[in-house]
Image (tube, rainbow, N blue to C red; front, top):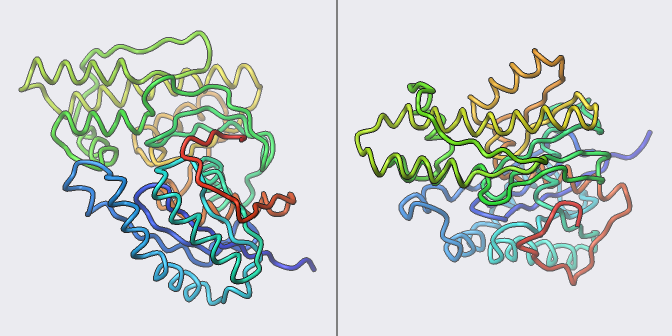
Length: 332
């Protein structure tokens, strides 16, 4: 019988300090998440310097909790995996430095993990039998891209946003209509009371790229010109057009690749309206659709430990010169 492989994941790319222990890339033994939402809420968004300081303050305690909950020690861990990009440079450096220290002190191999790969891997934890190839619609605060996942460590970006990420657009719309931060869940909630009755522009691309700045600007202008506009209707109409754009590109990608297995990933994949629309699309087109469980949509270390596992068994390793790469792209 093959030996179980335990990977320790460390995630600090934005405003969550998270450490997890995952067995064989799929089974979560612990996934401790220390969120800073309450701290950043009063500023209306993430303040990078505060985020870095908060990571520094809690990371050691989060590590102790993760090992305790998993009922393991550092000796039991096979590889130490940390997010090294993309993200906020100061925040990333806290996790990378901590991981390098652990690796050096314990003699365990170090693996830098791409945060976007982590979001894809969140689905391997939720869906134990899911295997590549599949199409992944990745939607978060910093990224929107349609990815052809050829294998566990092989990716081809078919289309990406040319301006705002969809999560960024959600946050800006939330701020404009007075909902505050974090925008995504608040827009989702208020939109449930609204109707899709406000016309907004949709960007038509001749490839699989996305553009959300036009729809975001239209919402800002409408709200500015009509202060009494129904905010629920505005949010619902925004959600509809943004989802239309995603659905159009998924349909085109299915035609291009012939792949009928669609995976959603990233924070915005938690949106209830987008999930409903994707389920409807799957029924109509006879597709298999996968969503990560809600706790794995947002940033967490279990997804980093899972992605790290697949890199580790493929022979990848990092050395102690590993550095944070804030603008890291998928496949780099």
